[in-house]
Image (cartoon, rainbow, N blue to C red; front, top):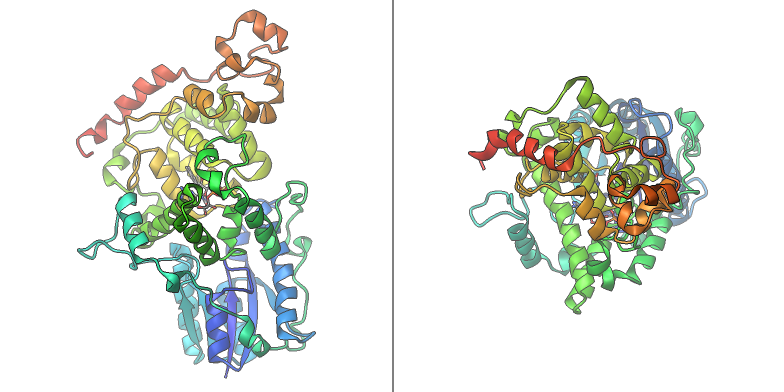
Length: 485
Ligand code: FAD
């Protein structure tokens, strides 16, 4: 029998559930990736993620060819509407089954159901597997069989359930010789960015290594400092986190491999590894929230009462939103963070919390606008974690911070970037200000500003809102949900 593995957000050739099962069940296995125009068409023409995917596929293609031991082995890359292309390819190859890994985003589920029915009409089965999470969907439930909506009990249940079985790899190598040569006519190389209609984004200059090798490089580097993660992770100027999110997003790193390493080191007493494992559990947590509550993908607040909040709108709100996007709010930590996402596609977790809170609770702008902006800019954009993070910050989500807890952007700046190293890196125009003045330049003495060559309103904006006044407005705005909380 023969099968086709459909790669989507799992761009690796090791520890891969669908590939493993296909190799077990079929004598001949083909591999394909579709650059799906449904996803690509709305994107800006310079998109780091498209370049990341493309580079990673070039590596995947070479790796599959090597595993197959055949010069004509490798990946069949297609460009078109996946819901049409994939069944057409399966038919052309004459396979009996298509193997893929779960993707629980509503749009992906809808696409997969469509593909499943088209394939079925052709007499081909679509078989899908858990791969992208350690636990998914209804695997970790409360004692009464309902999904968790609070993280800590979810995490405790996750930790009680975890064992070697869930963390072990799905091996590919033992049966890799079943990887089939590509038929003539399908032996084209992975499309160039140009052929896909995209422009290069300079990933190499960003030092964002792609593919399985890139993931391994970042993982090796992180393992050197994982023990200090719990202490270092909150300071954006420090190399504390792993920077692996984009690799977990596109599956160039297996979540089982990451979680296994964290679990082992945590069991040996590493507080850093235990905290990092917790972050991986947050990832699973938000995936299961989305699976159980798909309405959040369409803009609904997790807590429906929060949909009654009236956000500012009109030209003033538009101007504030534009200032936020472009890093012109006059709050240096917020502006430096926005410069980071705009220049690199990455933003440190502490800063994601700060800028999300600032948009909703200082600027009074609907958090969904920020969510969309992040979705466009983040290399690691994942609907579940992004929505979870935004709803956490705006207090409308499951296990979110209470609405009356409002981050003070200046205190956050003093606490988490005390020497202003991060701010100075992204806002060089403020570099000469003394540490104490850097977090709130409008409070600096005129002489300090003069000595640093900063004229407020020219070199750097004055604050677009007053935090204390904004805080009062936010408490009034959120009064509509007070009773529901
Ligand atoms: P590390 O600190 O090394 O963490 C390891 C991994 O754990 C991450 O790679 C990620 O996969 C996972 N993780 C960490 N924190 C979280 C979290 N809070 N929720 C879910 N998973 C987590 N993460 C995304 O992967 N994609 C997003 O689109 C995204 N949007 C966010 C939006 C907001 C408003 C907020 C507050 C957080 C968001 N996060 C998102 C979570 C977190 O900020 C990033 O995962 C993290 O900053 C990525 O950097 P890292 O790989 O160096 O993380």
